[in-house]
Length: 252
Image (cartoon, rainbow, N blue to C red):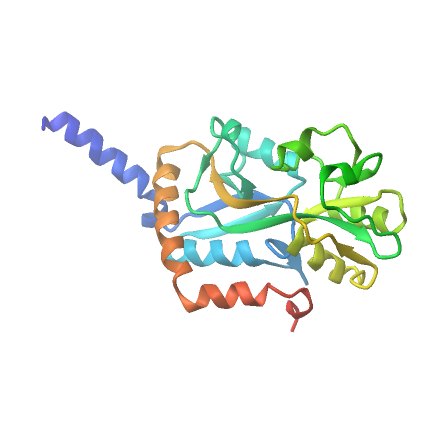
């Protein structure tokens, strides 16, 4: 191989290894979504956060996280103000603007929550006719039939907390959220006795770490995926899953 080509390859490898070699900080943004990532008593915590921080620690990288509304998270990555987004669904149309780590951080189960004193059973889409469904702006719902249906109307709320507040006040009939996240939020707000969810899921999806397109971040994405796969085989990963499984057990 000519010397010039070897020099180019060496330069690219050095660039790709820059994060680990210099102990740099990865600047991520996200929207709080307990129990995956959220703040408690002024400290960032959550399943996806703890997993990502441990994987990055093993790679010699510090994690810096900023909470933003979801649409601002997407904008921050697009404008280069952040290195990546922690906890995002992998959509083909997003691949042009971000690089997804191949190994998912977590799996989510989207369900419909209802007020216990006004339940709306859900078994098929027809059951939602003429209802008002609370949704979160900018969030992706992977069930195409639900996403495009005109049987019901959708009403956005600025936060997940606001959605549950509207639900118990009967301002919306149902609220769509991840099962684990919705139950955890209900516990935080003291609403577990007032809110329940339909056991039939709308769909299942996975949450990923997505990085901006950059040579050194491309190598980091590969290293992160490999280390995450290793971590998932360890008892420590199973312990984290168990810790965040029950909303009543998340505080000491």
